[in-house]
Image (cartoon, rainbow, N blue to C red; front, side):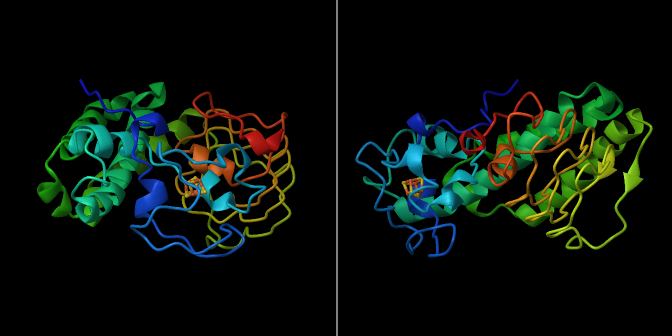
Length: 266
Ligand code: SF4
């Protein structure tokens, strides 16, 4: 049994994403910021002073970041409520992105475990989940020695198999043979991607109005500035809040139950 939460709770975090990570002035961020320095919009209570207005203020990039609960794990569990103001700040800023990546892997495994279609591999998924979860409770020195490439490759096959099982259950699996970037800016209105394996596909700025993504595997698919108005993502696998925050949808877009409609869609 795990106590790991896999969605962010900023009230339990030291504003780690707003301090540890760098950003560069661009269409996503209004200014430059070096990693390890607090964002000028972070207030004394580790909260963002412009949280409800990020897009309007030029900080769209912040709306598409998801720590998967790593912020509260690092703040409350690993550093036991002692913030970067007080000690170990450099170490904490190195530990945070490692925990963020481990929590992202846990979120995918957790989602796969919740699917009825993946029952044949639940034992393997559970073992992988428990192994990675245990890493996130280690001391900072041990966390800094973890090899994320190896850990990621260990779960990659299980996630692929989960995608196959979900697609197979729909008996409509089809693979995307084209290069990952070929859908950038493409006109795909009403396209049927049901049960497709779309891992890592770039849908940046594509017209996906009314497209059918039901039971599609979407791990790492890039929906930045894609128009997903009226698209159907019901039953899709490995779609994250950050992916949808980056897209433009509307009230007719159907999302998986674990995701919320981004505020800028309304
Ligand atoms: S703008 Fe707000 S959410 Fe973005 S880094 Fe700064 S404090 Fe954090």
